[in-house]
Length: 446
Image (cartoon, rainbow, N blue to C red; front, side, top):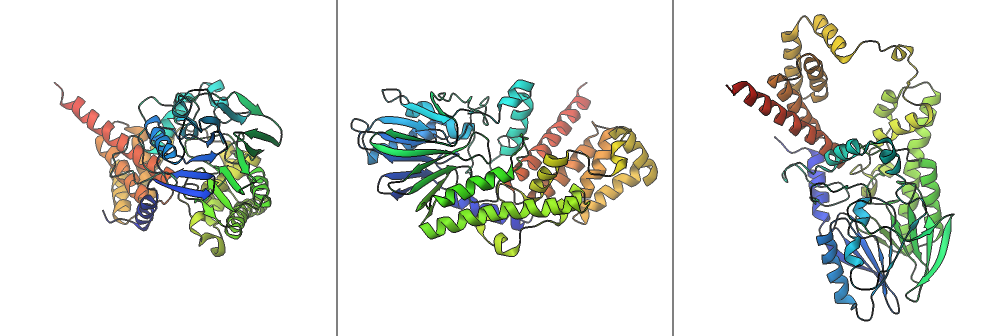
């Protein structure tokens, strides 16, 4: 299969996600792409402060070794670890930084883990993990999993809870509530600010003496991930924009994101934070305007795009977040699933019943199957997959129908830039092929 522009763009992004260490200021270092998330170090007078810890202990250990080449543990033990939020890719490596001797303070916001708590309460963690594995592409072979858009390819151990603090992470023991807190540790003065956006429990770390800002996942080099396909609670754009405005007002000289390379220089940092906020505000406003005009989520998702002056910037391309998914999330946030068409209040027939009617309308199963194959041949995989769904609603074990949909999903996945959507699509295609193979073996077993 010819590699699409989306594939080539992700391959280019993957080449940029190679492990490296950057000095942000005289006392601050950032490890990038060694682990799934970045890991920061602030060197104080008698210790170091670690900002986020990555996800995979073996990777975190490599980062700590690099940090110890810069400053030794006997004079500068780990005095504190600060979690920018509760996602497991930022907390799972924490045992590595807590096992050098004296237990460091571990700081977080008082609502730490806010995103996963509702899933746990509802008993939905099995669904959360399954969809998370698809989004991350953890079951895909290396040749299909290019990158995660803002993170390099890493394969966590089976059973790890990738999106919560349950990867063996050391729980926080120091918390703050309210807007901010002023703390002193290792002879360093820091401010921790509540900056909700991608998660409600998010915080940013401001080191005023050297004008360095650790922003966690409030910013990274991609259009923001307002809606992850694994599912989540509401990610509020208006709150996210307030956080970005606050960060810009601090006038940092160095911006250390939770993923991807930092930005250095006050003017550049202010510019990217401002444009990031403007991009979110633009999509928000266009969606609301369209809703007031009576348009449906499908119509809005198809028509709303970033203006050229924003879309041209690489840090606003859809490597990780997706504009159309953001539009749908805004619509659902304010008015729920009902799109305004009264017919959609009365969906009284099941997918199987609809499939029976579609096949009758098409003139039979063979005609519908032929049209699905023709759609693939003319490079219309979305329609092919839709028709395959009708066939599978009636014959869910039929090998040829399973392969047909898998082929369509492979074609769709090849052409999407957003890495999480690509991984999810290709993962489901792989699952369909395995199901077809298993059914074939069952038929051949005497």
